[in-house]
Structures are given as C-alpha cells and as structure tokens.
Length: 120
Image (cartoon, rainbow, N blue to C red; front, side, top):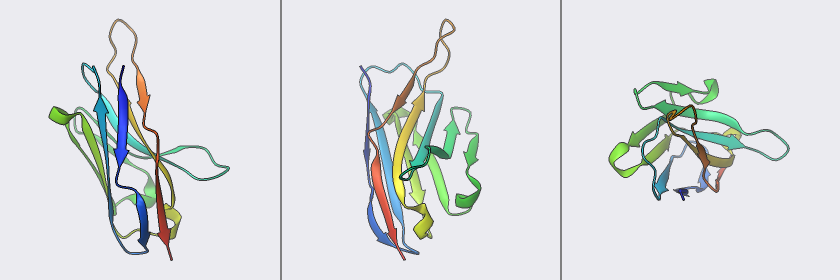
C-alpha cells in the first residue's frame, strides 16, 4: 500500500515563501508524474504544477515565475517551492503521483492535503 505524506504548509504573509514536500511511502515501483493541486472551498481541485519523469514541467499560469516544482526520484519525493506568495494562492494543496502504464493500467495516488494560507 502506498501513502503520500505531505508537509510544509502553513500561514505566511503576502510576498513570503513556503516549501511543500510530499514523500511516497510504501511499495511503489516507479512514478511517471508528480504534481501539486490546489483546492479552495466550493471549487474544484486544479493543477498547480506537474513534473514528468522526463523533466517536463507544466505550471498553472498564475504561478509561473513564482513556483518551482522539483523531484527526488531516489526518495520518491516531490517539492513545491512557492515564492512571492499572494492571497489568491491560499488553499489546500494536494500532492499527486501517477505510475507509468503497466499492462495497460496506471495508478494515481493523492496526499491528504496541506493548508496554505497567505495573509494580505
């Protein structure tokens, strides 16, 4: 069984920085894509950043130039460095990992979520 454990959320003033971490614990053979999603009350969970095993990154437009996603494959860990934080970055951040296809099947995992609150 695989569990994603997140850390690093909290309260920060606008303009500040936070670094989120997410480690996959358990028996996971390989991870194709690692990413972070954000959800606010009453809204859907939207992708903030993703990073493939081939080092391809995708960022949501509002975070480009401010957020950086990185991964440590040896530790099955993904990070999200968030700089120049704005009030609109507030939300619950969820870690997401996707395995590569094996026999036509791939598996997605989600973290428990970590609250990020940016005060203006």
